[in-house]
Image (cartoon, rainbow, N blue to C red; front, side, top):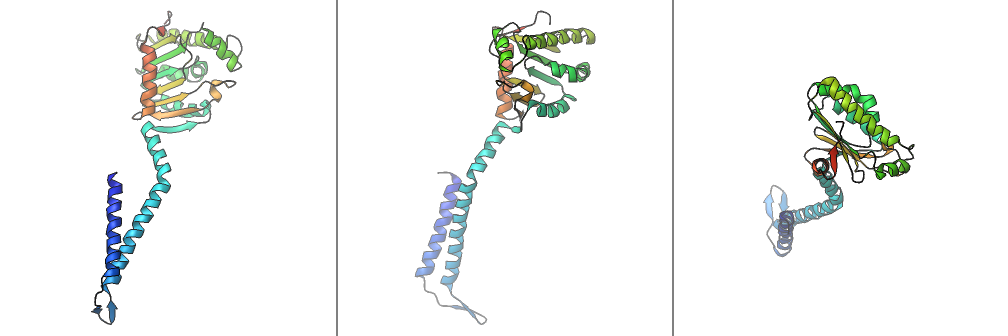
Length: 251
């Protein structure tokens, strides 16, 4: 039995004892001015108040327990936001990128990111930011199937991956960056979820059938919770496993 429950039981029993004592104890009235106050009435009042308080507390506890458990669950995972679409998520992630020091991205090409945030990423790279891209093997059968699943044109995802590879190569040469400052790897397993970590914030979303990536939902986790640790470790495990992921030969 939890300490909280033990305390409630003890308080409840104290109230019951006071009520029984009031019922059994016959005391002479004490005189205070013109009013007569019986001791058993005082005991009965206190006992009833104590018992009522415990009963109300128990009802409140079990009525609010689902909400309390939900809050505890969300707190343990440090889930701070749920976005209906990844386009909504971008409004938050784009702001975080302005001061980013580390970025990890796993997606299907990042062409839209490069087109809209390419200059910002270059500015952050000049200031020492590190970024890791992880994409599926552009020649895998999974990519062809994914193009079918989201009604993309044939070769679209492959072209997006090639676009990213070329951008990384050109950016590295343009800014004279160190090899570990901007990296890209391709993995051979099934496409993992879309993952974007920006310093202490991590965004993740699924790949859905008949929906392009920007129209699928996404979650935001913050460092210090299970969600952030879970997906960061997942990304790192695939990144480090040379049997699954390899650096692009042009990177």
